[in-house]
Every structure is written in structure tokens, then in C-alpha cells.
Image (cartoon, rainbow, N blue to C red; front, side, top):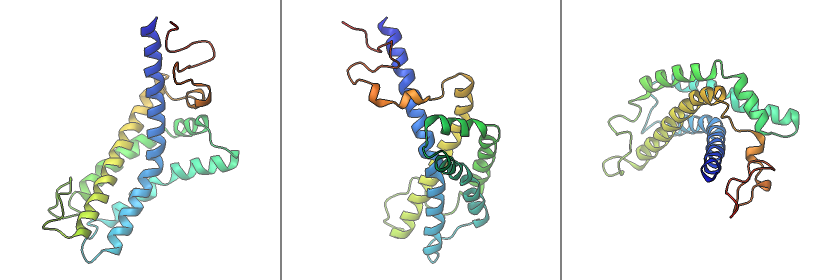
Length: 192
């Protein structure tokens, strides 16, 4: 009995963490890309974008989903997990596909943006602080983009395996810390 409770708890925890991470990345990726473009433009004497067209294309393609979610929240006067899930599912047919293509093309064309500085941005001993900051911004942007792409692909599998987060997963008021409840009838931890 306890094993089933722990399985339900970890399934719930996975769905919540997956959902929160995906929604955060939906908003974080365009913000990081905009920050990168802005920083590179403001410090063009030190760092330059090798291929600004791909940067602007990636920014343009990463904006519709978060803007669409904000617009849905405004139209419905609230934003629920079900609204987010339905919007993502609605766009599941093409968002992961174009994000995979964009991620590969983006990676190919932006690998040398910082010159010979490695991806993990060593301490700015031989490079200036501006180059180091540009490297950190580029690395964060790169990692967030790939994590977002991977989570979008996983979201397809989660949808078909019925593992997507649901509204009740985020109703923390009804969840008791000592015995997290998934619904009104079952407790995750067995009663002693």
C-alpha cells in the first residue's frame, strides 16, 4: 500500500515540476534571447553577433507562445493550468518540430559568437568583464533553449501517456504537508 502511495506522490511531483519548468522556460527563452541581443548590441565594440538574422528569427519564433498564453489569460481574466495545457497541446503539432529545427540551426550558426571563449565561460582573466558577461548570457540562453526544446518533445510523450499536469496538481491549499493528498479520497502516505 505504501509503495502505491509513493508512486502516486512521485508521479504528482514529476507532473508539477515538469509543468512549472516548461511554463517558466516558455517565458524565459524569449527574455534571455532579447537580453542577449540587447547586450551584444550595447557592447558591439567588444562582442558581436556572428549571425544576427538567426538571433532575430529565434526571438520572433519564441515569442508567440508566451504572448498567446498572456492573451488567453487576459481574455479569460485568469490563467489556469488547464488553459496553459490546452494551449500547449493545441500547438504541440508544430512547436516541438520547429523548435528542434531552430535549435539545431541556431546552434550551428551561433557557436562562435564569443570567439575562442569556451561554452562554460572561464573566469575573466585574459578576457574583459564584458566578454565574460556576454559568454554567460549566451550560455544561459543556449542551455535554456535546449532544455525548452527537450521538454517540448517530452511534453508530446507526456500528453500521450496522460502524464501532463492537471489543475488539481497545483491546488496546494488542499495538500497537507504531512500527507500530501492527490484527491479527496486518497492520501499519499499510509495512515499509521
